[in-house]
Image 1: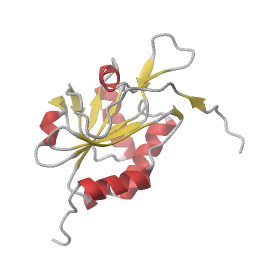
Image 2: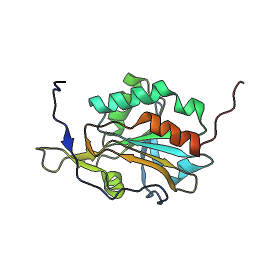
Image 3: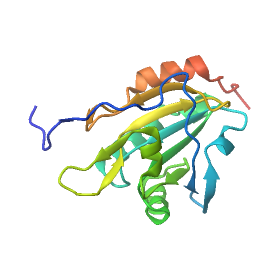
Amino acid sequence: MDLDFDIVDLPATDHPTEGDDAPEFTRPLVTDEYWEDVSLSSLLDGEPLLLVCYPMDGAFPATYIWNELRDRDFEDTYQLTIAGLSISTPYEHTTFIEERGIDTPLFSDPANGVAEQYDIVNDLDGMAGVAEPRPAVFLIDTDQTVRYAWVADEWPAFPPYDELEDALATHCEMKPLGP
């Protein structure tokens, strides 16, 4: 297959893995209505959180990741919260949410500080001082323990969605059926 881009191996990281505490952070959390500073721990009130780290809004990996997550209906099947995180500003998130029809709140982290805390920084080739988070997903339990982690080891890469669904089935309760 002839790709219009090169596959690039990324260096190893020391990201949080299963059993580790998820690093705490507070960033603007953007919805289709407004944004406000929200901490990671405040989203863990009563149910696990799937933190989806992705490149900037509008990049093809971001669109692909959110389309796949929408199509799989994880939030309709499992008792969990899903939140995204990227370097995009709240204004860019607002546009992305509207254009893509995303129902998920998105953390704005323009300085890439959360990616640094989680050791998932992707320095963009040929752009001095420009970085974004690698594609990554972290299933974080209500006690802030990581129950599942996947971090891209090449660029571009996408979460193993079937493996992620198995982790959700193991660590999250199913939503009750019916009204």
